[in-house]
Length: 125
Image (cartoon, rainbow, N blue to C red; front, side, top):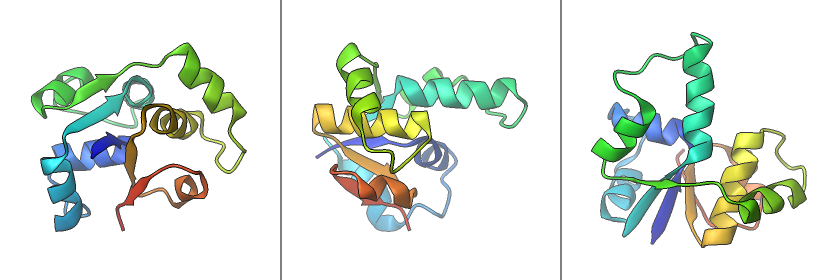
């Protein structure tokens, strides 16, 4: 199974947050490939610039040191994102849904709104 982490799950992984259950930790640790979207680095970068978030390293460095892969945004992804039903208004989460649908990925998320889309989801309780 190939996974796509949402922003919070990525941050929780990096900080060994106990909100990640053993089953989720195992799924991430044993996945064939774990992706972090360019949309996530954009979202977290905005939060850093606004002073809402502080990280010990650049997001891109954190992705690499965790052994995850970057998932770029493509024209196909953006087209799919704007065509999605408006179950979720957050453009970053909509991009993750579009990317997961386009690439056959399972999104690892705590966000219940994402489960409204026809995409595989691994929920963090």
